[in-house]
Length: 397
Image 1 (tube, rainbow, N blue to C red):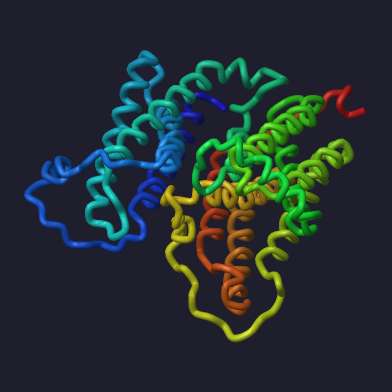
Image 2: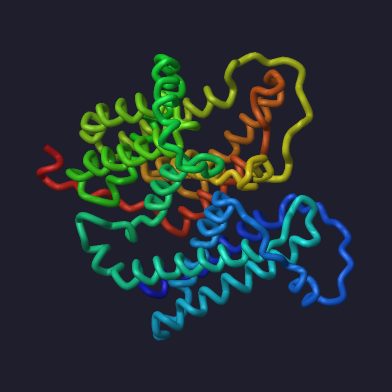
């Protein structure tokens, strides 16, 4: 991608990121009356507050994409320190403006702690972006690591790993682990649907890694990521872990050498078809339909507002972003057009959400979040189309 094209894409991505951040920060858009003398008065009312670790972690992660985009948008002739300072200041200004606006939003709590964590996120994101930009030419030529050649694939892998986080970050309690492990062992063999979805997720991660590194490295990298994730999952996050995660990862690692032998188009098309079937099964089970309800959530992302200490269910967002983003990516990588794939998959997800209105109460939550994420994935892939994996003679044999 040329420098001008890269800049233009980065500007589009920056606008897209800002739109999503403002939407997520200000929904559910239920306004309340607040008496104040001036905007400065609202700023002075902000207090530090006490934010739980999970909330702080989420704020840092949510502002990192802003910093990454600014690292590409800001003029390259500026010194790195100047770009880092401007990006950090932009993150601080945006966060402060959002916190002031949240005075007028019901259920929102304005806090200086959020401003501080958001600013840290913008700083870390810009530092990451500057590092990647400085080494982008070398990385794009590298056969081992090519994270900048397909940033969407890189983001989807990160989203898959992020989906294993818990909705809230617990305290590290090693003394409880043996009892939790015994409970997992007593639970017995997991059901096949969650195992199949876990295995499919890891296989899709393998297909994404195939465009980010040499084919010979994919299985080893996939195994290392699975081992790392499951080690953390069954220790620090053991309260939320399930046996399906272990079995699914092991099944995917056993199947990947066979899947890797398929032509790229067949592999991606097959994974897309399996993921589509999995979404239909998961979205419509137990396939019992009755009188239709009228509880469709018309405001997207309201289902991601957690009732736990974090306030926002980041792992659920990561899981949705991976699932629907990967489905669009697989279709486009197999030869489809990004905007058509995004529209078609969004329409299919909308149909599933509508059909869920006829399922038994409590089985499913019907929302527009999933179709919107698919549309966003299609838009992003219009700007950043998938890269082709490089096959060598050694890996093809």
